[in-house]
Image (cartoon, rainbow, N blue to C red; front, side, top):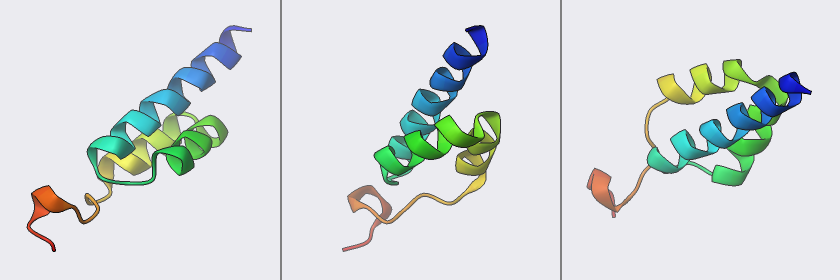
Length: 57
């Protein structure tokens, strides 16, 4: 049971990191649920997506 809770937390955390990097939140929540801590590592090292705060139009 604790493992399921931990995996759910990793999914939510990956979605939160994705939102901060202008990435698809739903996609990263699913990836976080599937890969757990590895998804957190991946989203932490990728570059932010294009957005208004990046100077892209």
